Image 1 (cartoon, rainbow, N blue to C red):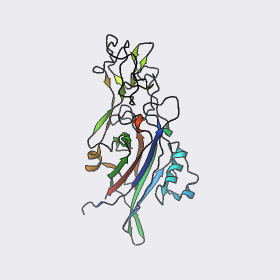
Image 2 (image 1 turned 30 degrees about the vertical axis):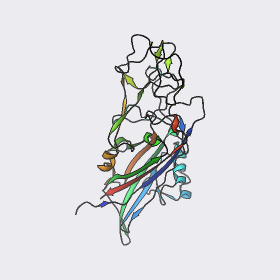
Image 3 (image 1 turned 60 degrees about the horizontal axis):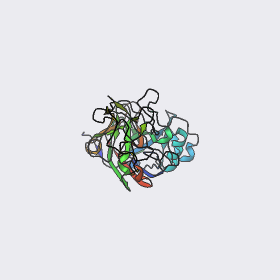
Image 4 (image 1 turned 135 degrees about the vertical axis):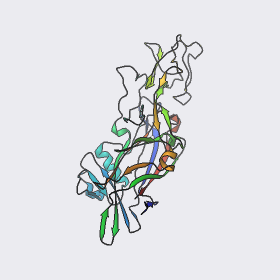
Length: 342
């Protein structure tokens, strides 16, 4: 018998994020707040196939029954969501596990090539990530959204329900919309035993984000510089760091902030970074064609447990050039659909 593809959505995740300006002393770059919602729809295809989605929790969810969830018979860490992952369930799960509920901040994956993944917080003004005393610091769990999803599929024949012991799951559709360009900064990290990749749904082709460089975090219209060394401050991650041999003489003494912390001016009398010799780190991502058009397998049903696992980190990549001050108060929505190939 040939493999059977089920083209109806297995999972639909809808996330709405309203980006607003943060309150604090530092306003620049990717320090924003957001409202996050997650919704799940679709549990069956006809009367012959059943699909279930659950959440694997790091901590006990003591009130799970009041949210219409059921503990897995064999694993107390798994809670099956009978009515799907509602906004209330997502908030309850995220709150108890320490992840973002209704507020997130822009973060960065830092250098990433498909190996170790971790999210770093935004730098502060004149904080140099290059020296040995100030390495990139991990983002707090409350800065981003994270869900450990669990899937199972069953065949129904009369009164008999049999768990499927195999099957590949794909991301078959994603709908992304926003006011402004904030949607371009959305990144989704997929991870399980066979996958570890970042998906950029706003790009067709694979690519990378540069995650190091100069910034104007105090918004004075000039690239930040260290007043002790008289050298421009390098943010993010870089190697082969070199500065110009003489101070800048064709720059500006004073300037006005143009609304973009990435595009600024060099200050006269300061040693400018040699951006042609210095190598800035990059974070690789997969685009729409690789993940969706070419139907990349994101998880598979294990033949022993009859379950499929998928870890999702949903975040806003601060080094994306679209994530700048003008995007505050902008709303975006994200909808993902999955398909199983038996």
